Image 1 (cartoon, rainbow, N blue to C red):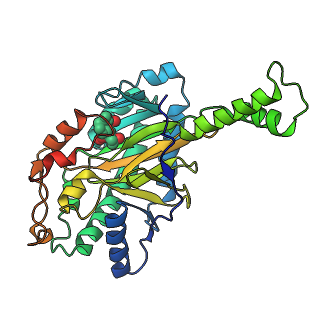
Image 2: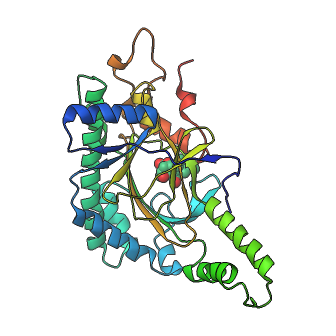
Image 3: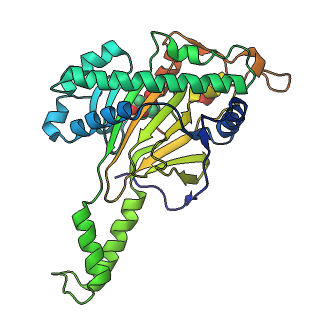
Length: 352
Ligand code: GA4
């Protein structure tokens, strides 16, 4: 079991929420500030139809509610499909089960055959969802380029629009650590029914046990800390908390799951390189909730394998020369996948 260390600080800091329906100049300003400060923000009024989100959520819940044996038939997640606890290929694990899919429609319909008994319905839900979140990601990337005063506003978004884009979709399911019933029983026995003889456990021991369970459950990691290697990540979760971001070492900020109409946006490593380090890829992780199931649907917007990653010359100044050498996404992905989840990788591409 992976637990968070007890020495770290968890602080409730208000994270930026950007209303995309505001005046464009306002939106540009907020997006640039949030990407520089946190590498993270939420967006509201994004225009993604609720039924598209709901259809995708229903398909996800229906998949994860299958028996373990049925789910295994859609695995392993190598390269795409169902995975449980194992993350990547280098020994990382967490309290999570997931479906990893390529965002390409052909690949989705291929993988859907092992995922669902109704692959056409499943793949049209995923394709519909991908189309919308990809469009949202492109719109945000265009706002970013404009906010950074790069003349070609499609300089980042065109990488995602490329037909060979290597974007992914990940559906994460974090089952609760203890069922609601056990939790209620423990809390009830210890706090409210002090006089009840709790079978063989004395009240004192039950209290210690309950405290310990609470302690462990609040520190239990579902998906360990990491930055996303891609350009931009768009995440939607249900109303259960657990996501945390770390804008600086040792400090963790919980991301509230509300308002539930929002999407969370993460700057990835590749966007950090594309902005010459102005935007920061944000470290984040997901904790397991003690009694509720958390579900998230994540789109990772990535370039095509042979796309060349190099920042626009407008972001290079006499005071800030090129921070990273040019590289291809295939090169960066290879370096990423050969490392551990929590490793920092971008510095290997820094100009000395
Ligand atoms: C993190 C972001 C995405 O979930 C992911 C992950 C990938 C995987 O699960 O296979 C990686 C991880 C992620 C970065 C380091 C490597 C690769 C697991 C891991 C240990 C799908 C991705 O693209 O990179």
